[in-house]
Image (cartoon, rainbow, N blue to C red; front, side):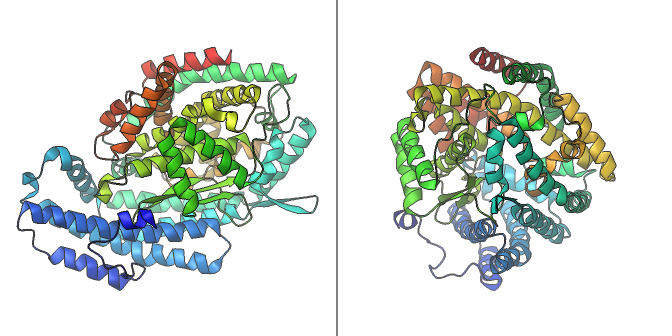
Length: 565
């Protein structure tokens, strides 16, 4: 395969089996024992270490992908858990030992800081929080996350004798028939209610384990530890609280006005939870494709139109079998892009059922994939990935840059409708993002909370950032709605990045209204930097500012509301 040959192994033999812990350990021992007698020797050592970590990461990614594609396959599950229990703890231990060797090397100062400064900062930060006793706890946390994915990946609804995934059943939430929508919503909610206690138990265990990790590392709570672990050098928990306050002040009123408009359009006295995904003018739902082949064909046209190089990269993904797109039983929920870091090839996973939201997800994950391609030539594994706050600019900008080209799926009238729906969804997204972010801030700064305490905190957040949907008679579904968002369970504190990045993406979108080609050019220039520069520089290179204060929120909110009428 062409991409494989470009990034062939130079330090490792081609037949090195990185699924075997003893082989991995022998490679790490060689790196630890190697003398670093000069700056060039240090640079070569970094390259060899990077190659090893990249291929170990690919081994883990391959097993993770298989597990999420087949959560009901016990052999695949065992292979993934073997990685979590045997290989991940080993790599954590050896990463720290090699980090220590690197920091002690006197030749670091001889290497250019503009090239290696970001790497030194990352290594210093993770070394400061490493504790041997946390290795086993991290493994326990990974296993709890896998249990959540297995549990919710198995949820189905039976309708007319046919077993449907949650995503397939959710299509009816877009149906103009309100009674049918209600029935579908109730069926889905009943299935989530059936696993409520188990999900609550899993989260209780996650809070316990994660809090202990933080305490072991010398932190008062897991929130503060997570900010250090995620290397959030450019903002603080207080900044996230200010962000939430600005959303409550500026965007929540806009979202409430859209909710009032929706209520008038639907001709209802109250918005019920089954009224939020249907077209507000009660038109039939947009159905842009049937089956993965049509989704791929349409997105191919979109990417070709955004920028031909992106279209070529998407063809590589098809040729190499790097797409698993359709919803099926036993598949984990949600969608993601995962990079196979050895071959430096992206993989896209999602649960498509033929909706406009599926197209958005495909474009979103496509943006991540193009980011991976753009930074693939960076030789150091550590510097290939941008911070998540900018990685999500790559994905969310692609959603917006694709809007003019959605004729690949629609007539012009439906394309315009899809664009309006997308902007409406962005306005409503910000308040929801704030609830998911803030419930985690609350949960981990109150580690001894009870389930009732947590329920009360969530209800308070819903009122602060929502409150326009009437859940009378369905209070349990409202109070445990956050169970359906996998991020708090599988990637804790990974959600505020979406809000920060959405503002950046809206900036790219506004740039594209003035000069589309130049906006795409700057966007791709930002992607090409990978993780070699700090967040403000990445944003600036893409043509936008790293800013999620009220002064950044207000103008984009006004522009979206202007376009939404």
